[in-house]
Image 1: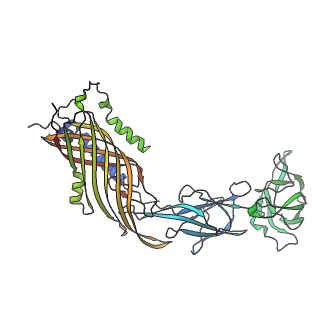
Image 2: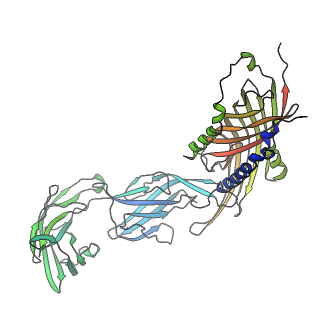
Image 3: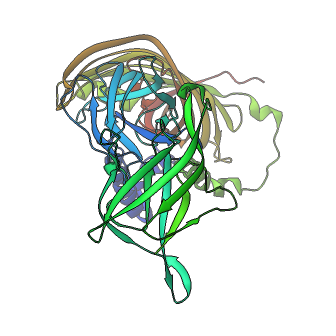
Length: 296
Length: 221
């Protein structure tokens, strides 16, 4: 009795292929081990909220004070530097979540709805929760846009747009170096708005320390704002005068006060207009551009 | 990338077979000599030795010269228990249909080294009790059920089938499974499709070992 086909089924009978059969066997075993599902990062329960400017859509740097999930005690800190986005975990046991983002200017409340699908993964892993269909809910009190409908990696998922800041003026410091104008840094010990102690504290803008420029908030309900700086133990002044115009640029932001015909007088040094090809020195931009340069 | 490299591997395996000289083909060669019916020994062994699996798979093919139209069908029921107490179970029927091409041309026994393709379809139901403990969100337990789900997929296959004694044949088939379409609109996402396997990757591999009987067809004179 002959079994000519048996060699196809049992290659171990053929000495030449015995080794290769063992190698094949080991390969199959290795692949089976690698084929086990990875228990890590199965659940995509994180959401990235990025801060953007409504004016041009670019990323915005926000100084956060506190980030909370409504109904939860924990606070979450910003993980990017500069802080342009905030990551929150998502509660996969429910289908909506509200978050509060408290920065130095205001508190934002963002409500997000989503779909949660569940899956058994393996006998060694915990279940997987797949979060998708992210959507902005009407309870959000800000301009929120969903950028990606699936949570987890690949964020940001949500963009929060802020209205333009029409009152931030930027002043740069310069010096004469070998006959040429060069950047200068000034050590400012203290800064304040003259005669307006109730006015917004300016400390959240970089106005103290060793600076090459400063951002200063002008009063929108006045036509002049005077700042006092302590520089090398001497009080120096910057006095801005300007006109104001009310206009609605973005419907969501309502009527805003814009500043025109801006002028600066200062005893720190010689004030020069810093006018570029694409911007005028007497107008406010967001993000701020250098309006004036003070040459010491 | 993985998908294409797997297809390339399969094609490479049979490249020598494609290199054979062309033979003249007579229409009479397409008259089938028999119908081969078999059972999958892997499903049988798993049913016998694995308490959490019950199932069978059968295959039927017929020879048309080098081409073997094939139908495979089966049933399987699996259950799993995870370390944290979560459970998952599925049960369903499946079938695959396709054709194999034999690259051993001049063997009078019609032993086969073949390449083939299959379209697979499965109808199944599943249920899971999912348990999770999270330091932020607390304890979670939920039982979910899906019924009457369907899934489909494609396979590229290769293997051998050889005559071992009179009417009896043995053969194994390696399957590269891809292009799966699973209903993912349910709250419980499918973990395993009967006939296909685990759904956590875009592609997967499978293996069958068939014991077959060839029922000869009467020869036309």
